[in-house]
Length: 102
Image 1: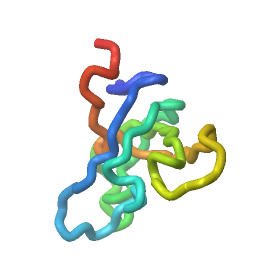
Image 2: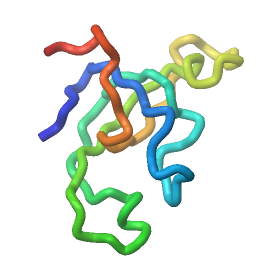
Image 3: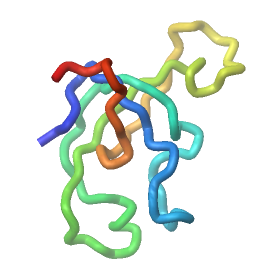
Image 4: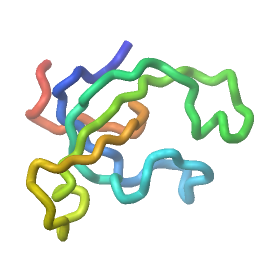
């Protein structure tokens, strides 16, 4: 069951164990950024575990999250409406306080 709904604001975790990471699918440049859930893609195996042949762990919800480019790259000088969408697993996301419906 998905924790977040389309339209919810989320923050990508800035730090995620293990430290240092061994195999991480979430891009470093997006960590700590706030975006909006654009789509729920479904439940899949954790690619950070699958990379090591661990195929039988729990499945996790994958979301497509939309970020304003100016929020990702502060020096971005393109149109304010430009955005980037990234698919991110639920365990990398945190709710943005006061932004999401109960």
